Image (cartoon, rainbow, N blue to C red):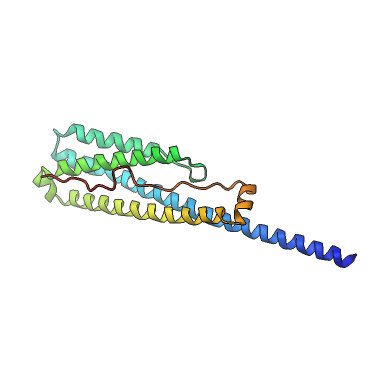
Length: 193
């Protein structure tokens, strides 16, 4: 009787340890994914922080391009007003966030095109530095999004694989959304001079 009871207790302890290990593993990959999401938001914030400097620099040279400058400022405001919580993110929230960031990228592209019309501005060291900083920010954003997608893939695989999916359901773990390419991104942009 004692051996049977000890055997049952040992099995229960092993199952509890296994469940605890599985749960902790899911928490670890979830935290990696949410950290990656925070890194994406940080990269977007860096870009948003640089934009006022770029706008002011261009404004000094291109005062009659007010609509473009206003559009960039408004797009920046919209992009920075939308934040996402990776642990409760929906597909709709992800699309809204991506659209705001895409609109900002488009506005920046138009601002850079306007700047091309001003040779003195293109030669200005401050403008070149800001342009390089923005290019670096875009590269950081792309890298952060790639790392986020990799972390989300790892997390989603972890919680969807058997037997983790059983514990994920019990403990309320849900799949996370990835950043996706915007529609039309498969086509190269048309550049005209």
